[in-house]
Image (cartoon, rainbow, N blue to C red):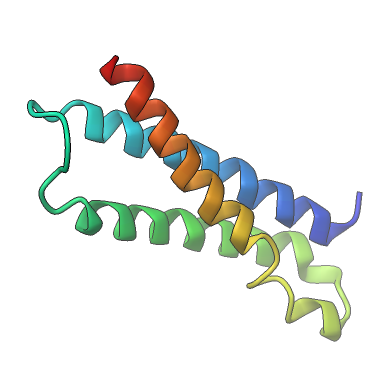
Length: 97
């Protein structure tokens, strides 16, 4: 497997893990529905997980060519975001029903 593929799948996996964590956090609130300040919970936690993937991705992609090193920061961003949102919704819904 290529280094960029490893980074892609790592971001997808950690996006889903972050989504499950957020779903558990939101389901523990006493009132169902909109959680006050949920944006201020989602953004820092997602940013923390993304920074973790960036640091690990830099280590994985240390032997890449200079053209491919530019792709380390953007490779797998969309799966990270969409899996984060999807797993947050699925986990929250599963725990609230």
